[in-house]
Length: 448
Image (cartoon, rainbow, N blue to C red; front, side):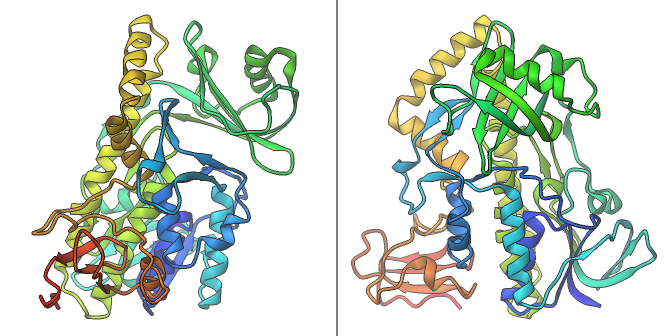
């Protein structure tokens, strides 16, 4: 018996379990894999994800492992400026998903929690006051609540009967970790994806560490291959040669996978005592580097709410706000990745559209808006009586030498008295860093 069962030990599940453990909630986390794959997978930590990890003291050990700090982001390869937002982290941090998983799993171990591996979910029984998860090896686990963080092919979502509407992919691309001899004049830095309209190819080659680079490419050849076709050495070599000629010579393919621009979203993120987060709740094209970050932020939103209900500090209705707040955010990411996909179509008319869009992004206000969406810094939840309510609280330096982020380390709400803050005199900040209540009247009492 456990209070919360988390199914899936990727970044989303691990962060959710970390949040629950911080609150003193009994949590069990399982995964079907016998061990972590070690594959780099996602590469980018967006500014808002950096902020939430920093607010728990979890970011600093990862900074030393960053392979790059990329100023700003991109929308279909068009540059976005993150410095227009008030943040301590106006960069994309090049931190592979594997490093984040390793770090979060090690942190959980300090709380005495280890991932129970080799457990493949095959059955789910729900009652009014608990759920029972059954696994292929005969194991059963009873829990008060269950969170499905088990990826795009989520067994939790399927067994719960939660619909996953959307559309199938229209193009196929390849992502691979490779070792290559790179003789490009501009080699060694992170660059925006390159587009070759005449042959429909898109390619990016990014250095990781220890001589390994991340290659992403798509072109006419990839559209004619099944999604489950193994990524071969010759296919990768042809993609590199078509772009770089003799400047880049492939030596080894360490790992390769195909993906599509399929876009789907769960109709409900909560079904009774079952929740969905991360790729179990939404899938989309990786354009813009938002996927892992969207899942981390799902977990951060759900964690404190679930902990409060488990501990009897809040009513069940608080859990409904998880879907209400995060479903629109996921829908927005699906929409912007589909829009980016259109801007990458190798067509003369789309090229004109892309040029027009580039002109629009040269306007600071337009760039700021999209930068806020891709970085996560612009996310806002239901507004209230004060303009700050529903928005993320900037990480201010406070008079006692602390900051808003360090005051949030315990994962509890924080009431701030801000005599010299221009927007409000008193602010109540939720554990996830968003403003619950604010007033310009320093004598007005905060809500309970």
